Image (cartoon, rainbow, N blue to C red; front, side):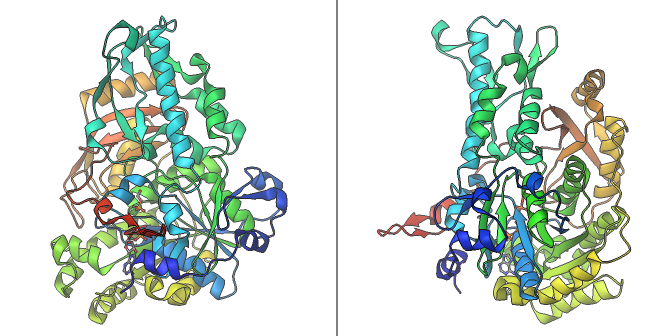
Length: 556
Ligand SMILES: Nc1ncnc2c1ncn2[C@@H]1O[C@H](COP(=O)(O)OP(=O)(O)O)[C@@H](O)[C@H]1O
Ligand SMILES: O=COP(=O)(O)O
Protein backbone atom coordinates (compact mmCIF):
# COMPACT_ATOMS: atom_id res chain seq x y z
CA UNK A 1 0.00 0.00 0.00
CA UNK A 2 1.37 3.41 -0.99
CA UNK A 3 2.02 5.95 1.76
CA UNK A 4 0.38 9.37 1.74
CA UNK A 5 3.54 11.01 0.41
CA UNK A 6 3.97 8.37 -2.33
CA UNK A 7 0.37 8.94 -3.45
CA UNK A 8 0.88 12.71 -3.29
CA UNK A 9 4.05 12.57 -5.36
CA UNK A 10 2.17 10.75 -8.14
CA UNK A 11 -0.55 13.43 -8.40
CA UNK A 12 -0.69 15.77 -11.40
CA UNK A 13 -1.00 19.29 -10.09
CA UNK A 14 -2.28 22.19 -12.15
CA UNK A 15 -0.31 25.45 -12.15
CA UNK A 16 -1.76 27.57 -9.33
CA UNK A 17 -2.67 30.20 -11.92
CA UNK A 18 -5.30 27.81 -13.36
CA UNK A 19 -6.77 27.25 -9.88
CA UNK A 20 -6.91 31.01 -9.23
CA UNK A 21 -8.42 31.76 -12.62
CA UNK A 22 -10.91 28.93 -12.14
CA UNK A 23 -12.11 30.85 -9.07
CA UNK A 24 -12.59 33.96 -11.18
CA UNK A 25 -9.64 35.74 -9.56
CA UNK A 26 -7.79 38.46 -11.44
CA UNK A 27 -4.04 39.13 -11.40
CA UNK A 28 -4.29 41.57 -8.46
CA UNK A 29 -6.16 39.09 -6.28
CA UNK A 30 -3.26 36.69 -5.80
CA UNK A 31 0.50 36.32 -5.97
CA UNK A 32 2.35 33.09 -6.76
CA UNK A 33 4.58 31.36 -4.24
CA UNK A 34 6.22 28.91 -6.63
CA UNK A 35 4.22 26.98 -9.22
CA UNK A 36 1.64 25.35 -6.96
CA UNK A 37 1.09 27.78 -4.05
CA UNK A 38 -0.20 31.33 -3.89
CA UNK A 39 -1.19 33.97 -1.37
CA UNK A 40 -4.56 35.63 -1.82
CA UNK A 41 -5.18 39.29 -1.24
CA UNK A 42 -6.44 40.00 2.30
CA UNK A 43 -8.96 42.41 0.81
CA UNK A 44 -10.88 39.83 -1.28
CA UNK A 45 -13.77 39.51 1.19
CA UNK A 46 -14.30 43.27 1.01
CA UNK A 47 -13.87 43.35 -2.78
CA UNK A 48 -16.42 40.54 -3.20
CA UNK A 49 -18.83 41.86 -0.53
CA UNK A 50 -21.55 42.09 -3.16
CA UNK A 51 -21.39 38.34 -3.82
CA UNK A 52 -23.64 35.98 -1.83
CA UNK A 53 -21.85 33.64 0.55
CA UNK A 54 -21.52 29.95 -0.17
CA UNK A 55 -22.91 27.46 2.30
CA UNK A 56 -20.54 26.57 5.13
CA UNK A 57 -20.13 22.93 6.13
CA UNK A 58 -18.21 22.22 9.33
CA UNK A 59 -16.41 18.87 9.66
CA UNK A 60 -15.87 17.60 13.19
CA UNK A 61 -15.44 14.18 14.75
CA UNK A 62 -15.75 11.94 17.78
CA UNK A 63 -12.94 11.90 20.34
CA UNK A 64 -9.96 10.61 18.33
CA UNK A 65 -7.20 8.06 18.63
CA UNK A 66 -3.73 9.67 18.72
CA UNK A 67 -3.49 9.35 14.93
CA UNK A 68 -6.72 11.27 14.24
CA UNK A 69 -9.95 10.02 12.63
CA UNK A 70 -9.81 11.71 9.25
CA UNK A 71 -11.45 15.14 9.55
CA UNK A 72 -8.92 16.72 7.17
CA UNK A 73 -9.15 13.70 4.85
CA UNK A 74 -12.97 13.82 4.82
CA UNK A 75 -12.93 17.61 4.42
CA UNK A 76 -10.76 17.26 1.32
CA UNK A 77 -12.70 14.25 0.03
CA UNK A 78 -16.06 15.95 0.51
CA UNK A 79 -14.84 19.05 -1.33
CA UNK A 80 -13.68 16.85 -4.20
CA UNK A 81 -16.97 14.92 -4.21
CA UNK A 82 -19.03 18.13 -4.34
CA UNK A 83 -17.02 19.24 -7.36
CA UNK A 84 -17.42 15.78 -8.92
CA UNK A 85 -21.22 16.26 -8.83
CA UNK A 86 -21.00 19.68 -10.42
CA UNK A 87 -21.03 21.93 -7.36
CA UNK A 88 -18.50 24.71 -6.85
CA UNK A 89 -16.76 23.76 -3.60
CA UNK A 90 -13.76 25.37 -1.92
CA UNK A 91 -11.99 23.80 1.05
CA UNK A 92 -10.75 25.83 4.05
CA UNK A 93 -8.23 24.07 6.27
CA UNK A 94 -5.75 24.85 9.01
CA UNK A 95 -2.07 24.57 8.22
CA UNK A 96 0.01 21.93 10.00
CA UNK A 97 2.32 22.62 12.92
CA UNK A 98 5.80 21.07 12.89
CA UNK A 99 5.07 19.87 16.41
CA UNK A 100 2.76 17.00 15.42
CA UNK A 101 4.46 16.62 12.02
CA UNK A 102 7.77 15.75 13.70
CA UNK A 103 6.00 14.22 16.67
CA UNK A 104 3.13 11.82 17.02
CA UNK A 105 0.33 12.88 14.76
CA UNK A 106 1.89 13.27 11.40
CA UNK A 107 0.77 15.76 8.82
CA UNK A 108 -2.46 17.67 8.49
CA UNK A 109 -2.86 17.64 4.73
CA UNK A 110 -5.44 14.85 4.64
CA UNK A 111 -4.53 11.37 3.44
CA UNK A 112 -4.75 8.77 0.73
CA UNK A 113 -6.49 10.12 -2.38
CA UNK A 114 -7.89 13.07 -0.48
CA UNK A 115 -4.93 15.29 0.25
CA UNK A 116 -4.08 18.92 -0.29
CA UNK A 117 -0.87 19.37 -2.24
CA UNK A 118 2.06 19.99 -2.32
CA UNK A 119 1.85 18.07 0.98
CA UNK A 120 5.60 18.27 1.70
CA UNK A 121 5.54 22.06 1.50
CA UNK A 122 2.26 22.34 3.40
CA UNK A 123 3.47 20.03 6.18
CA UNK A 124 6.87 21.73 6.49
CA UNK A 125 7.40 25.47 5.96
CA UNK A 126 4.50 26.19 3.57
CA UNK A 127 4.58 29.95 2.92
CA UNK A 128 6.29 30.82 6.21
CA UNK A 129 3.22 31.93 8.18
CA UNK A 130 4.04 29.92 11.30
CA UNK A 131 7.61 31.24 11.25
CA UNK A 132 6.24 34.79 11.01
CA UNK A 133 3.93 34.15 13.95
CA UNK A 134 6.84 32.68 15.95
CA UNK A 135 8.98 35.73 15.13
CA UNK A 136 6.26 38.21 16.08
CA UNK A 137 5.53 36.38 19.32
CA UNK A 138 9.22 36.21 20.31
CA UNK A 139 9.93 39.77 19.21
CA UNK A 140 7.34 40.81 21.77
CA UNK A 141 8.99 38.64 24.41
CA UNK A 142 12.36 40.25 23.64
CA UNK A 143 10.83 43.75 23.82
CA UNK A 144 9.35 42.97 27.24
CA UNK A 145 12.66 41.80 28.69
CA UNK A 146 14.49 44.68 27.03
CA UNK A 147 12.01 47.17 28.54
CA UNK A 148 12.66 45.76 32.01
CA UNK A 149 16.45 45.70 31.43
CA UNK A 150 16.42 49.32 30.23
CA UNK A 151 14.89 50.73 33.42
CA UNK A 152 11.33 49.32 33.42
CA UNK A 153 9.53 52.65 32.95
CA UNK A 154 6.17 50.82 32.88
CA UNK A 155 6.91 49.27 36.29
CA UNK A 156 6.29 45.76 34.93
CA UNK A 157 6.43 43.10 37.64
CA UNK A 158 8.79 40.38 36.26
CA UNK A 159 6.91 37.83 38.39
CA UNK A 160 3.61 38.63 36.66
CA UNK A 161 4.53 38.40 32.98
CA UNK A 162 1.89 36.27 31.17
CA UNK A 163 3.55 36.42 27.75
CA UNK A 164 5.54 33.28 26.87
CA UNK A 165 8.03 32.62 24.13
CA UNK A 166 7.00 30.07 21.48
CA UNK A 167 8.56 27.57 19.14
CA UNK A 168 6.81 25.46 16.52
CA UNK A 169 8.10 22.17 17.91
CA UNK A 170 7.16 19.79 20.71
CA UNK A 171 9.85 20.49 23.29
CA UNK A 172 8.99 19.68 26.90
CA UNK A 173 12.47 20.88 28.01
CA UNK A 174 11.36 24.47 27.34
CA UNK A 175 8.11 24.41 29.29
CA UNK A 176 9.65 26.15 32.30
CA UNK A 177 12.92 28.08 32.01
CA UNK A 178 14.77 30.98 33.62
CA UNK A 179 15.92 33.87 31.42
CA UNK A 180 18.27 36.79 32.09
CA UNK A 181 20.97 34.81 33.88
CA UNK A 182 24.62 35.92 33.76
CA UNK A 183 24.72 39.28 35.47
CA UNK A 184 23.73 42.92 34.87
CA UNK A 185 24.66 42.98 31.19
CA UNK A 186 22.40 40.01 30.38
CA UNK A 187 18.99 41.19 31.41
CA UNK A 188 16.92 40.67 34.53
CA UNK A 189 16.54 37.06 35.75
CA UNK A 190 12.94 35.80 35.76
CA UNK A 191 10.97 32.64 35.21
CA UNK A 192 9.68 32.14 31.68
CA UNK A 193 8.74 29.28 29.39
CA UNK A 194 7.77 28.30 25.86
CA UNK A 195 4.43 27.41 24.39
CA UNK A 196 4.11 25.78 21.00
CA UNK A 197 3.51 28.40 18.28
CA UNK A 198 0.00 27.17 17.54
CA UNK A 199 -0.97 28.03 21.13
CA UNK A 200 0.28 31.61 20.74
CA UNK A 201 -2.24 34.39 21.12
CA UNK A 202 -0.72 35.87 17.95
CA UNK A 203 -1.95 32.76 16.07
CA UNK A 204 -5.43 33.18 17.54
CA UNK A 205 -5.46 36.87 16.61
CA UNK A 206 -4.36 36.14 13.04
CA UNK A 207 -7.17 33.59 12.80
CA UNK A 208 -9.87 35.89 14.16
CA UNK A 209 -8.88 39.26 12.66
CA UNK A 210 -11.16 40.53 9.92
CA UNK A 211 -8.43 42.57 8.20
CA UNK A 212 -5.08 44.29 8.80
CA UNK A 213 -6.72 47.11 10.76
CA UNK A 214 -8.45 44.64 13.07
CA UNK A 215 -5.19 42.69 13.37
CA UNK A 216 -3.40 45.81 14.60
CA UNK A 217 -6.18 46.68 17.06
CA UNK A 218 -6.15 43.17 18.51
CA UNK A 219 -2.35 43.04 18.71
CA UNK A 220 -2.39 46.39 20.55
CA UNK A 221 -4.78 44.99 23.15
CA UNK A 222 -2.63 41.97 24.05
CA UNK A 223 -2.02 41.99 27.82
CA UNK A 224 1.58 40.84 28.33
CA UNK A 225 1.51 40.99 32.10
CA UNK A 226 0.95 43.31 35.03
CA UNK A 227 2.68 46.12 36.93
CA UNK A 228 3.76 45.86 40.57
CA UNK A 229 0.39 47.40 41.44
CA UNK A 230 -1.37 44.77 39.30
CA UNK A 231 -2.39 47.02 36.39
CA UNK A 232 -2.50 45.26 32.98
CA UNK A 233 0.35 46.14 30.59
CA UNK A 234 -0.48 45.97 26.88
CA UNK A 235 1.47 45.83 23.64
CA UNK A 236 0.27 49.38 23.03
CA UNK A 237 1.92 50.47 26.29
CA UNK A 238 5.17 49.02 24.91
CA UNK A 239 4.57 50.85 21.60
CA UNK A 240 5.51 47.79 19.48
CA UNK A 241 2.18 47.02 17.80
CA UNK A 242 3.42 48.49 14.50
CA UNK A 243 6.53 46.30 14.47
CA UNK A 244 4.52 43.16 15.20
CA UNK A 245 1.99 43.89 12.46
CA UNK A 246 4.89 44.54 10.06
CA UNK A 247 6.19 41.05 10.84
CA UNK A 248 2.71 39.61 10.19
CA UNK A 249 1.52 41.56 7.15
CA UNK A 250 2.19 38.77 4.65
CA UNK A 251 1.12 36.01 7.04
CA UNK A 252 -2.27 37.74 7.15
CA UNK A 253 -2.87 36.75 3.52
CA UNK A 254 -4.54 33.34 3.12
CA UNK A 255 -2.81 30.62 1.11
CA UNK A 256 -4.26 29.01 -2.02
CA UNK A 257 -3.36 25.45 -3.02
CA UNK A 258 -5.27 22.53 -4.51
CA UNK A 259 -6.31 18.97 -3.71
CA UNK A 260 -5.22 15.84 -5.58
CA UNK A 261 -8.28 16.38 -7.83
CA UNK A 262 -7.48 20.08 -8.30
CA UNK A 263 -10.25 21.31 -5.97
CA UNK A 264 -9.26 24.76 -4.64
CA UNK A 265 -8.14 24.78 -1.02
CA UNK A 266 -7.50 27.84 1.13
CA UNK A 267 -5.20 27.00 4.03
CA UNK A 268 -4.51 29.60 6.69
CA UNK A 269 -3.79 29.60 10.40
CA UNK A 270 -3.23 26.53 12.50
CA UNK A 271 -4.32 26.73 16.15
CA UNK A 272 -4.67 23.36 17.87
CA UNK A 273 -8.11 22.61 19.28
CA UNK A 274 -7.01 21.15 22.62
CA UNK A 275 -4.96 24.18 23.74
CA UNK A 276 -6.32 26.92 21.41
CA UNK A 277 -9.49 27.54 19.45
CA UNK A 278 -8.70 25.00 16.73
CA UNK A 279 -10.10 26.70 13.60
CA UNK A 280 -8.54 28.00 10.41
CA UNK A 281 -8.65 31.76 9.92
CA UNK A 282 -11.89 33.67 9.59
CA UNK A 283 -10.34 35.30 6.53
CA UNK A 284 -9.83 31.92 4.84
CA UNK A 285 -13.40 30.78 5.57
CA UNK A 286 -14.95 34.08 4.49
CA UNK A 287 -12.81 34.26 1.34
CA UNK A 288 -13.77 30.67 0.47
CA UNK A 289 -17.43 31.58 1.01
CA UNK A 290 -17.10 34.34 -1.57
CA UNK A 291 -15.42 32.05 -4.11
CA UNK A 292 -17.47 28.88 -3.81
CA UNK A 293 -21.10 27.77 -3.46
CA UNK A 294 -19.97 25.35 -0.74
CA UNK A 295 -17.16 25.79 1.79
CA UNK A 296 -16.01 22.63 3.51
CA UNK A 297 -13.98 23.47 6.60
CA UNK A 298 -12.85 21.61 9.70
CA UNK A 299 -12.10 22.31 13.34
CA UNK A 300 -9.70 20.29 15.44
CA UNK A 301 -10.23 17.11 17.41
CA UNK A 302 -13.75 16.19 18.53
CA UNK A 303 -16.97 18.19 18.64
CA UNK A 304 -16.26 18.83 22.34
CA UNK A 305 -13.25 20.95 21.30
CA UNK A 306 -12.95 22.26 17.75
CA UNK A 307 -16.63 22.33 16.88
CA UNK A 308 -17.66 23.93 20.19
CA UNK A 309 -15.07 26.67 19.73
CA UNK A 310 -15.91 27.11 16.03
CA UNK A 311 -19.56 27.58 16.98
CA UNK A 312 -19.10 29.64 20.16
CA UNK A 313 -16.02 31.72 19.23
CA UNK A 314 -15.37 31.81 15.45
CA UNK A 315 -19.00 32.27 14.30
CA UNK A 316 -19.36 35.14 16.78
CA UNK A 317 -16.16 36.82 15.62
CA UNK A 318 -17.21 36.45 11.99
CA UNK A 319 -20.94 37.01 12.50
CA UNK A 320 -21.96 33.96 10.45
CA UNK A 321 -23.77 30.65 10.95
CA UNK A 322 -22.77 27.28 9.48
CA UNK A 323 -25.28 25.49 7.26
CA UNK A 324 -24.55 21.89 8.22
CA UNK A 325 -22.12 19.70 10.15
CA UNK A 326 -20.37 16.44 9.28
CA UNK A 327 -19.41 14.26 12.25
CA UNK A 328 -16.62 11.88 11.27
CA UNK A 329 -16.76 8.53 13.03
CA UNK A 330 -14.37 5.62 12.60
CA UNK A 331 -14.54 1.98 13.54
CA UNK A 332 -11.12 2.19 15.16
CA UNK A 333 -11.90 5.11 17.46
CA UNK A 334 -15.28 3.69 18.44
CA UNK A 335 -13.67 0.36 19.32
CA UNK A 336 -11.14 2.26 21.43
CA UNK A 337 -14.04 4.00 23.20
CA UNK A 338 -15.57 0.56 23.64
CA UNK A 339 -12.53 -0.63 25.56
CA UNK A 340 -10.15 -2.06 22.92
CA UNK A 341 -6.47 -1.20 23.55
CA UNK A 342 -4.99 1.20 20.94
CA UNK A 343 -2.59 -1.48 19.65
CA UNK A 344 -5.42 -3.89 18.86
CA UNK A 345 -7.84 -1.76 16.87
CA UNK A 346 -7.54 -3.60 13.56
CA UNK A 347 -9.26 -6.82 14.66
CA UNK A 348 -13.05 -7.06 14.24
CA UNK A 349 -14.85 -6.55 17.55
CA UNK A 350 -18.56 -5.82 17.19
CA UNK A 351 -19.29 -5.84 20.92
CA UNK A 352 -16.61 -3.21 21.64
CA UNK A 353 -17.82 -1.20 18.66
CA UNK A 354 -21.38 -1.20 19.95
CA UNK A 355 -20.13 -0.25 23.41
CA UNK A 356 -18.11 2.63 21.96
CA UNK A 357 -21.08 4.13 20.09
CA UNK A 358 -21.92 6.10 23.26
CA UNK A 359 -19.06 8.47 22.44
CA UNK A 360 -20.65 9.19 19.04
CA UNK A 361 -24.03 9.49 20.76
CA UNK A 362 -22.74 12.35 22.95
CA UNK A 363 -21.31 14.27 20.00
CA UNK A 364 -24.60 13.83 18.12
CA UNK A 365 -26.41 15.31 21.12
CA UNK A 366 -23.94 18.22 21.19
CA UNK A 367 -24.50 19.14 17.53
CA UNK A 368 -28.26 18.75 18.03
CA UNK A 369 -28.06 21.14 21.02
CA UNK A 370 -26.40 23.70 18.73
CA UNK A 371 -29.50 23.33 16.54
CA UNK A 372 -27.63 22.32 13.39
CA UNK A 373 -28.44 19.65 10.78
CA UNK A 374 -25.72 17.04 10.39
CA UNK A 375 -24.58 13.86 8.66
CA UNK A 376 -22.43 11.13 10.18
CA UNK A 377 -19.54 10.21 7.86
CA UNK A 378 -18.20 6.71 8.54
CA UNK A 379 -14.61 7.21 7.42
CA UNK A 380 -13.83 3.67 6.21
CA UNK A 381 -10.34 2.32 6.94
CA UNK A 382 -8.88 -0.67 5.03
CA UNK A 383 -9.05 -2.78 8.20
CA UNK A 384 -12.78 -2.15 8.76
CA UNK A 385 -15.03 -5.15 8.14
CA UNK A 386 -18.46 -4.86 6.53
CA UNK A 387 -20.02 -6.12 9.76
CA UNK A 388 -18.39 -3.22 11.61
CA UNK A 389 -19.41 -0.48 9.19
CA UNK A 390 -22.91 -1.95 8.98
CA UNK A 391 -23.09 -1.84 12.80
CA UNK A 392 -22.51 1.92 12.77
CA UNK A 393 -24.89 2.43 9.85
CA UNK A 394 -27.73 0.56 11.53
CA UNK A 395 -27.09 2.41 14.80
CA UNK A 396 -27.59 5.68 12.90
CA UNK A 397 -30.53 4.50 10.81
CA UNK A 398 -32.35 3.17 13.89
CA UNK A 399 -32.19 6.73 15.26
CA UNK A 400 -33.14 8.40 11.96
CA UNK A 401 -29.68 9.94 11.79
CA UNK A 402 -28.30 10.69 8.31
CA UNK A 403 -25.20 8.60 7.69
CA UNK A 404 -22.91 7.95 4.73
CA UNK A 405 -20.19 5.35 4.35
CA UNK A 406 -17.26 7.47 3.16
CA UNK A 407 -14.30 6.07 1.24
CA UNK A 408 -12.55 9.27 0.21
CA UNK A 409 -9.18 8.11 1.55
CA UNK A 410 -9.15 5.12 -0.78
CA UNK A 411 -11.11 6.59 -3.72
CA UNK A 412 -10.87 10.37 -3.54
CA UNK A 413 -14.01 12.35 -4.42
CA UNK A 414 -15.69 9.29 -5.90
CA UNK A 415 -15.70 7.81 -2.39
CA UNK A 416 -17.70 10.75 -1.02
CA UNK A 417 -20.60 11.12 -3.45
CA UNK A 418 -23.22 9.73 -1.03
CA UNK A 419 -21.87 12.01 1.70
CA UNK A 420 -21.94 15.02 -0.63
CA UNK A 421 -25.55 14.36 -1.64
CA UNK A 422 -26.68 13.95 1.97
CA UNK A 423 -24.79 17.05 3.07
CA UNK A 424 -26.43 19.13 0.32
CA UNK A 425 -29.82 17.90 1.52
CA UNK A 426 -28.95 18.98 5.06
CA UNK A 427 -27.78 22.44 3.96
CA UNK A 428 -31.24 22.88 2.46
CA UNK A 429 -32.89 21.51 5.58
CA UNK A 430 -35.41 23.69 7.32
CA UNK A 431 -34.40 22.22 10.69
CA UNK A 432 -31.70 24.77 11.34
CA UNK A 433 -32.11 26.69 14.58
CA UNK A 434 -28.55 27.64 15.41
CA UNK A 435 -27.92 28.68 19.00
CA UNK A 436 -24.70 28.95 20.95
CA UNK A 437 -23.87 27.25 24.25
CA UNK A 438 -23.78 30.42 26.34
CA UNK A 439 -24.50 34.12 26.26
CA UNK A 440 -21.60 36.58 26.45
CA UNK A 441 -23.34 38.26 29.37
CA UNK A 442 -23.22 35.05 31.41
CA UNK A 443 -20.60 35.15 34.16
CA UNK A 444 -17.29 33.39 33.49
CA UNK A 445 -18.08 30.41 35.71
CA UNK A 446 -21.58 30.08 34.18
CA UNK A 447 -20.10 30.02 30.66
CA UNK A 448 -17.56 27.37 31.66
CA UNK A 449 -20.19 25.31 33.46
CA UNK A 450 -22.55 25.41 30.47
CA UNK A 451 -19.82 24.06 28.19
CA UNK A 452 -18.79 21.40 30.70
CA UNK A 453 -22.34 20.20 31.35
CA UNK A 454 -23.88 20.56 27.87
CA UNK A 455 -20.89 19.60 25.70
CA UNK A 456 -18.82 17.29 27.89
CA UNK A 457 -21.61 15.79 30.01
CA UNK A 458 -19.93 16.79 33.27
CA UNK A 459 -21.88 17.01 36.51
CA UNK A 460 -20.13 20.26 37.39
CA UNK A 461 -16.86 22.19 37.34
CA UNK A 462 -14.31 22.46 40.14
CA UNK A 463 -12.60 25.86 40.05
CA UNK A 464 -9.19 26.10 41.74
CA UNK A 465 -8.47 28.88 44.23
CA UNK A 466 -6.07 30.43 41.68
CA UNK A 467 -8.73 30.41 38.95
CA UNK A 468 -11.32 31.90 41.32
CA UNK A 469 -8.98 34.82 42.08
CA UNK A 470 -8.41 35.25 38.35
CA UNK A 471 -12.16 35.28 37.66
CA UNK A 472 -12.79 38.09 40.13
CA UNK A 473 -9.83 40.07 38.75
CA UNK A 474 -11.01 39.57 35.15
CA UNK A 475 -14.52 40.69 36.12
CA UNK A 476 -13.01 43.97 37.42
CA UNK A 477 -11.25 44.41 34.04
CA UNK A 478 -14.47 43.77 32.10
CA UNK A 479 -12.96 40.64 30.53
CA UNK A 480 -15.86 38.49 31.75
CA UNK A 481 -17.66 39.50 28.54
CA UNK A 482 -15.26 37.39 26.48
CA UNK A 483 -16.11 33.94 25.06
CA UNK A 484 -14.40 30.91 26.55
CA UNK A 485 -11.61 28.91 24.89
CA UNK A 486 -11.47 25.59 26.74
CA UNK A 487 -8.07 23.86 26.87
CA UNK A 488 -8.70 20.17 27.52
CA UNK A 489 -7.45 16.76 26.51
CA UNK A 490 -8.72 15.65 23.09
CA UNK A 491 -8.95 12.00 24.05
CA UNK A 492 -11.80 12.23 26.55
CA UNK A 493 -15.00 14.17 27.03
CA UNK A 494 -13.68 14.71 30.56
CA UNK A 495 -10.36 16.30 31.57
CA UNK A 496 -8.88 12.83 32.20
CA UNK A 497 -7.44 11.36 28.95
CA UNK A 498 -7.94 7.83 30.28
CA UNK A 499 -11.75 8.21 30.61
CA UNK A 500 -12.92 7.05 27.16
CA UNK A 501 -16.38 6.35 25.80
CA UNK A 502 -19.01 8.50 27.47
CA UNK A 503 -17.84 9.09 31.04
CA UNK A 504 -20.39 10.22 33.61
CA UNK A 505 -20.34 11.39 37.21
CA UNK A 506 -17.27 13.56 36.62
CA UNK A 507 -16.37 17.21 37.20
CA UNK A 508 -14.05 19.33 35.05
CA UNK A 509 -11.17 20.76 37.10
CA UNK A 510 -10.46 24.38 36.17
CA UNK A 511 -6.74 24.87 36.90
CA UNK A 512 -6.19 28.43 35.72
CA UNK A 513 -7.60 30.99 33.27
CA UNK A 514 -5.38 33.02 30.93
CA UNK A 515 -6.68 36.24 29.33
CA UNK A 516 -6.18 36.53 25.57
CA UNK A 517 -7.43 40.10 25.46
CA UNK A 518 -6.18 40.65 21.92
CA UNK A 519 -7.82 37.52 20.57
CA UNK A 520 -10.86 38.36 22.68
CA UNK A 521 -11.31 35.19 24.66
CA UNK A 522 -10.33 33.59 27.98
CA UNK A 523 -8.27 30.37 27.80
CA UNK A 524 -9.49 27.98 30.50
CA UNK A 525 -6.90 25.33 31.36
CA UNK A 526 -8.36 22.08 32.66
CA UNK A 527 -6.78 18.98 34.18
CA UNK A 528 -3.10 18.60 33.26
CA UNK A 529 -3.35 19.97 29.73
CA UNK A 530 -0.04 21.45 28.51
CA UNK A 531 0.50 24.35 26.07
CA UNK A 532 3.89 22.92 25.06
CA UNK A 533 3.50 19.25 24.07
CA UNK A 534 6.34 16.75 24.36
CA UNK A 535 7.72 14.35 21.73
CA UNK A 536 6.69 10.66 21.90
CA UNK A 537 9.09 7.75 22.45
CA UNK A 538 9.44 7.26 18.68
CA UNK A 539 8.89 10.64 16.96
CA UNK A 540 7.74 10.59 13.34
CA UNK A 541 11.03 12.39 12.66
CA UNK A 542 12.82 9.04 12.92
CA UNK A 543 11.29 8.00 9.59
CA UNK A 544 12.13 11.16 7.67
CA UNK A 545 14.87 11.79 5.16
CA UNK A 546 15.66 13.41 1.82
CA UNK A 547 16.87 11.43 -1.20
CA UNK A 548 20.02 12.50 -3.06
CA UNK A 549 17.85 14.17 -5.69
CA UNK A 550 16.08 16.17 -2.98
CA UNK A 551 12.86 14.20 -2.62
CA UNK A 552 11.25 14.14 0.84
CA UNK A 553 10.68 10.68 2.29
CA UNK A 554 8.94 9.54 5.44
CA UNK A 555 6.49 12.44 5.61
CA UNK A 556 3.72 9.86 6.20
N1 LIG B 1 -10.06 6.09 5.73
C1 LIG B 1 -8.76 6.10 6.04
N2 LIG B 1 -8.02 4.99 5.83
C2 LIG B 1 -6.69 4.97 6.17
N3 LIG B 1 -6.03 6.02 6.71
C3 LIG B 1 -6.75 7.15 6.92
C4 LIG B 1 -8.13 7.25 6.61
N4 LIG B 1 -8.55 8.51 6.95
C5 LIG B 1 -7.48 9.15 7.45
N5 LIG B 1 -6.40 8.34 7.43
C6 LIG B 1 -5.04 8.67 7.89
O1 LIG B 1 -5.17 8.97 9.28
C7 LIG B 1 -4.33 10.07 9.62
C8 LIG B 1 -5.20 11.19 10.20
O2 LIG B 1 -6.04 11.69 9.18
P1 LIG B 1 -6.45 13.23 9.24
O3 LIG B 1 -7.37 13.50 8.11
O4 LIG B 1 -5.22 14.07 9.40
O5 LIG B 1 -7.27 13.25 10.61
P2 LIG B 1 -7.68 14.52 11.52
O6 LIG B 1 -7.76 15.69 10.60
O7 LIG B 1 -8.98 14.14 12.12
O8 LIG B 1 -6.59 14.64 12.53
C9 LIG B 1 -3.62 10.50 8.31
O9 LIG B 1 -2.35 9.86 8.27
C10 LIG B 1 -4.48 9.92 7.22
O10 LIG B 1 -3.74 9.57 6.06
O1 LIG C 1 -6.08 20.55 16.74
C1 LIG C 1 -6.13 19.39 16.33
O2 LIG C 1 -6.51 19.10 15.08
P1 LIG C 1 -6.64 17.64 14.46
O3 LIG C 1 -7.91 17.07 14.96
O4 LIG C 1 -6.68 17.91 12.97
O5 LIG C 1 -5.44 16.87 14.90
